[in-house]
Length: 487
Image (cartoon, rainbow, N blue to C red):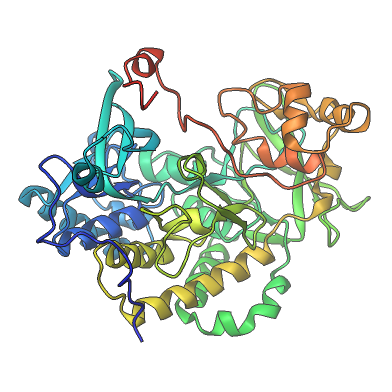
């Protein structure tokens, strides 16, 4: 049976808020946000879509800059047709006035509309979204009855000696360079880390002309064995993996499982990496190290849900299969805060296809429509596959064994591993927050997004979900100009 959101206060065509107030504000125009926005608009809701990027698609459907003159940007993407259909729908809804599309808008907080005293108007405008817009950093405030957070994710990095050398980039960063700039990070690129993204990155780089001597995967694919039923229910995903594997074979790329890059070497930029075999807990095995010459390294250990807006609102979280913190969502994509929905990677890393499905489910729920049973089944099938991937590639506890004491863990504040270990052993730090206060690790520009997992691991725990009042840098003049109730 379809899931029915009959208990939801969804706005219908006969229950319009006053002019200038959206029925639904969607934060993020990646797969989940884009699907939610166009689906909700198709139901007659008035939607405002805010996105930090200049074009829809998010990190997954990243476009080359127009001035590059790319004739076939779809050649760099998997599943481009699904995006293209929704982008066309977005253009149509924007032209008709059903969607207000606001690119280049960084939403930094969402607050309740408590300052409105009139009960009827307060019911019509439950939330205010504050954003920084454009290169001139204008203050923008959007009011909406409901909010859907589709803020995506960022890369999980596990540091190693030499990871600060020029030429060492994130795996997703290498793919972004190729998709957005049509450039390669180097001519001879080692792809390393853990997770299915590595295969896609290696295949893309090799097809674009890079020499990829090895894909260095820290996990073992035997970790998928316990989830065989979930794999068999997703033949399209298995076929996708076969395509990536075939690309590696065609380009002569070697796949090293249960291995990791434990050090990068070079002076002005990376010149080679040391690769070592790992035990079941990801500890480097003595005597297994080998050196691979390269001029670039694309490394990443999966993704981390970007939750700052949600946790700032008090939305409950859970521990996902890959060890990251994700939002705790119900069957209708609702968070624990009434009026706040979420879809995509915020609910756990799963990829673009589940994000599209979850965006549609959330739009049905917000509009007060019954969710088609086919969407529910598809989400369950895709999420089961994602959980299997998360468990198989979850970092083992022993990876910190490749960190020397002089290895910078926090790049922004230049805090080495030895100082964090000292805070734990001698100063009583038992979690990442205490280690941060004692060492400044995580206090820099990235606010712990890069070093957070490593600091937490060295402190003996897992990275806790961020809770911060500002999800991105905000000029002081904009904060000073806020109404007292919002300040």
